[in-house]
Length: 213
Image (cartoon, rainbow, N blue to C red; front, side, top):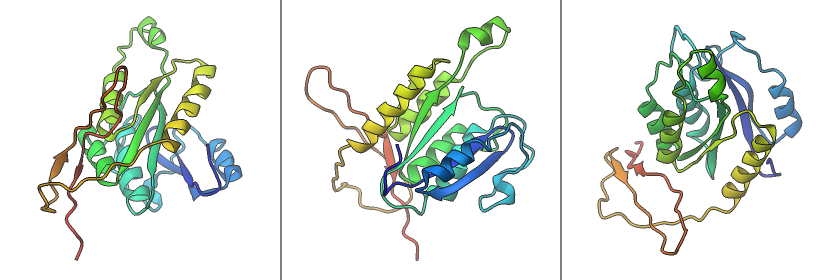
C-alpha cells in the first residue's frame, strides 16, 4: 500500500502500546518492524516519545487509538488513517472508547478495523465475544469501515486492497458552517448521496478546535 510520498508507522498492542517503527516511507523498515512484534514485550510508548497510562491489564486498543492519534498524527498534514488489526476486544485501557474516538476526530484521522476473530472458537471455549460493536462504532464515527475477515488469509489480503482503493479514491467536500465559533465544540455532519444503492462513508462530525495563541 505504501507509495513514494506515503509514510507509515507500526504499533503493536497488548498490555503495552509499543512503537515498533516511527513514520517512514521505507517498506523495508516497516517490514523489519513487523517481525519485531512480540506479546507483552514490555517496551511501551511510556518509555518513548508518547506517554501512556500506568498499570495496563490487557489489550489496550482504545489507548492505542488515542496515543497514535494525539502523539503521532495530530501534527501531520494530509490524509491520515489508522488501520487496526485486532479481534476488537479492549481490556484495561485507561482511555474510554469515546475518548479514543474524540482523539481521532480532533486529529482528522480515519480509523479502519480489520477484524480478525474466530468467534466460534471463543464460544467453544466458553468466552463471550464483544469486539464487533465497539469497533463498528469507532470506524463509523471516524469515517472508516470495519472489515470482518475472521481467520481467512485471503480475506485479509483483500481487506488491505479495499482500504487502499478507498483511501486513494476519496472525495473531499468543503463547506462554510453557519456556526463560525471556534469554541472546541463538536459539529455534527450528515452527507447524503442520491442514487439507488449508493452509500456515503463519512465521519459523523468534527471539532471546532480552539485556535492556539
